[in-house]
Image (cartoon, rainbow, N blue to C red; front, side, top):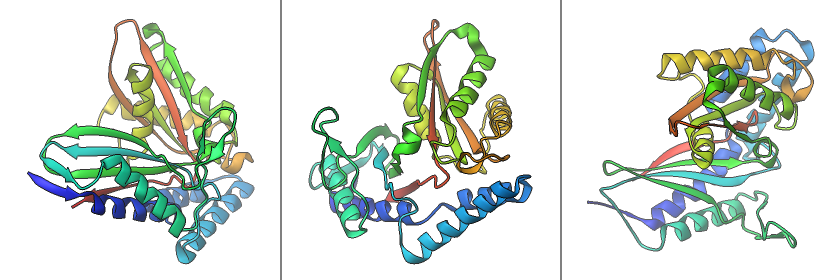
Length: 282
């Protein structure tokens, strides 16, 4: 049995809050460069160049990529042979969030209760935590500070099984079309298909952690992702909603078994910063 003290978890979370807000992932940066090279709009090319410059300044000066430093969302993969020692796991995670946002001078955006008073919790907690027990003795943290602009452009639909592939494709493309410039494109599109109402949303969000250069292991899903991506980039929404060929950097689809009478579909977007990171606590 492998033991991991919650002090290590708190420290890892504290570091993640700042690393994700200051440093754009390499795959995101490179994908923006790729799209800039083939962008036909001069305005869109200029916007993509400015986005890259801003990302570089953020990394150099340890400044937030965006003024909206996000609601912390975590997916935990906890090996069944790992024993967490110390304080409560949720307490340790939220302590790391609090420390990271305070020490990094990151904006606190969480309010409670959500209706009526909406008083700021003043430390950006509590985080949204999803825990999955897996085989082995490893503890992985999938961390994403989700900004309001992209998160607000989320959609779910309980489709009919007969809607099939075309129904899913049309729903995803229409969701991005309705979102327009609100999620700060170019976006990354997470899609969850199957499970049930809440499972499809979790699949959509978790799919966003996949590297933009890693193809879907399913040939059929990979082809569908490319079809959807092409249709989205034909919408002429473009960077920051000002037109162009680059509305999305990628489409990621995750699936799960579902009821014979259902076809749940969810869409969750990330902005051009696409802040996320996966770490293993040892």
